[in-house]
Image 1: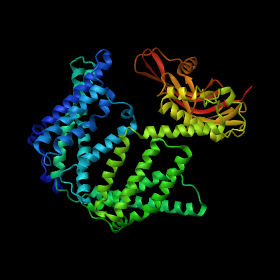
Image 2: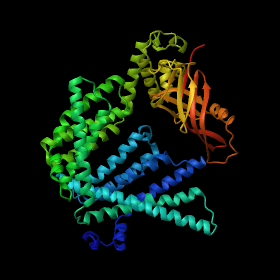
Image 3: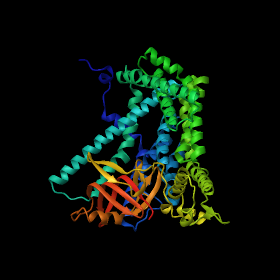
Image 4: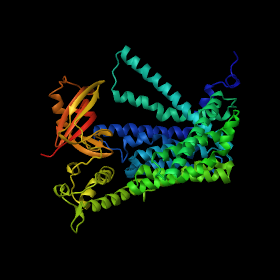
Length: 573
């Protein structure tokens, strides 16, 4: 069987890779600097005596890739566009960034998961839009963008293979010849690969993919013609049926509709990109690529209303701010579909850079600050409505007085708890206490919508049904229960419908469970699990626990995870 033409022509030459290395001196220097900063920062944090400026090992690890992509763009994407003098200036920009980082540090918003994701997304887009071969038409953007993504994926794959080989060989040598090496030092050797080898590998592969003449791609043919195109049609049918339901029954659009809109938009753009890739489109795919823009008009209108309804009812959150930003990007891209069809992807990519980048790196009114302001207004409004604020100072009433208030609506109390917890855990808990006074939210009487009379309830554990008498409970909470201990160490937080229901000291649970389940003497990193329904009583709650995962470190047991199946709220005596 003959090999495809592309594989017969292409030969991997070590000299080509060596040539790339010889032309990448500055990138190697910056990679080594970043790698050494990461290693020294970890050692400094471990020794707790040597502090290397304001660097943080976790942030260095997270932002290593966006930093190296930005460095790569500054070093090599501007060579033919500016004079040699300005090229020297650009070569010093990454060094200046690291210097400022070391002197003043970066924190606050940079530690949020949202900015992590945004930084990675924008850095990849920056790789595409700064390509020398990208002109103003969509064909070059789609094809060069495809090359960049393939180079990135190939780099990740090859680095993973090299990593696995290095780890396997080094561990084999250590084991067979009985060498000893500290675990941290082995990790430092392994980390040299993604920090230093990966950037060189990417630059080499990017040049390889740019030089290849791609032939007919059967995988792309199947993906676009027979997977993505039917998906667009299915999404369009779903949205059309929902629009009919919306107009006939005058319903308020559901929040999930916004995610369906984004899915239709993204899959539709992928189908549109098929016009510029090297394979033959079916008539159906071509028709969808040309006409799906009409489905976006009513869809975007309903999307805007769905977001508005949620924000009006529950206030802004970081997720809803980004959801609105995505709506702006979809609107600008849809306008381009109608008025500038040859520049759709250019408008799409630059819209992401401007809207998401400007929103995320705007520290005057960042998404987090906007969400905290909105949730504060929501909390104060609900507190006044429920009568939780009293006196001229505008502080919360004592919990005893709040629990005596009659005629409270369960849903509104739950919304107040949600807004308060959002400010407490996403914002500054000390500021919240100083501004509105101390409020023991855990002891505010929980009210639940599913508190209908129940006599017996059946729980299934390990496929075995267990019945429990629940007449002793004022209400039974089931569903949407989860556990988290991220924000407060050694405290188990059990939440119901995104609101903190109760905080239990972890030691209480551990001591109670250890009286039932015996665990042998453990060493660091030991893990154990108990399984079987256990009822733990705390305050006026009976907490039905299915499984508990423990881990042993720092000379004590810790609760890692709780599987809570039900909580019974005891009736008042």
